[in-house]
Length: 268
Image 1 (spheres, one colour):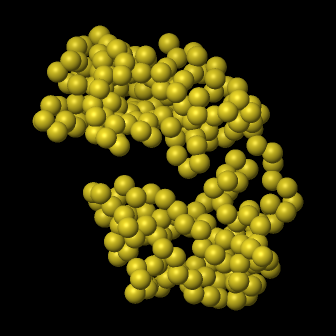
Image 2 (cartoon, helix red, strand yellow; image 1 turned 180 degrees about the vertical axis):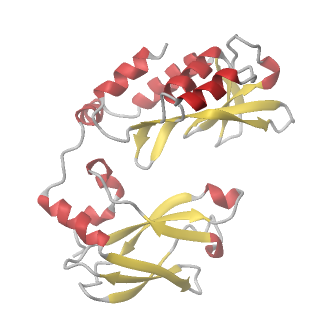
């Protein structure tokens, strides 16, 4: 049923451009097959084949996502629905009142920006095809060719940068009067990096938990062996600084070059 997607994925040599769990292992497969939830057959087939799926990476985001387990939700009017996926513009769901065992059902989307709800497809596979086509149009022909070909491996200089960032140590030590997070940073490497990438998320459940981003600490003046205090604004307009949590960003891979400012030139 989804051969078109399998074929497309097989042509792309950029790791993490698509992230899928599937095919599901036997125990999870049995759970899906025995479930009495009357989800559309095409959606169930997708889950069995792919599991959770994140498709079409752009920066640190994925333009299309499908969840292996839909979550119960409701509209503002209280109408029950099953939230099964999303794009970076809208949430996608089935209305429970329209679910019929063994049959397809319309897909509705709720737009994040304007809060408008509308039917966007007659069934799950149709929705997925439309959204995948929409996502592909986000990339220029040249960029798509680069994605299919895969990134160039790290140069020797880039490898030194990756090794150097592993030797940096940092910790959060406070919050400034202006609401900036205060970091103590130690350069344990033998080089100077322009920036150090750090992940940021909200601590508390609820609205704050939706924060999942990153910041780039300007460490160009922290020389080998030195320790310095650096203040950085970390989404204070979105989340109270007290509710911000900073954590290590994993090592970059070649396709992550644009997400790690360590690869930028040193400021002059």
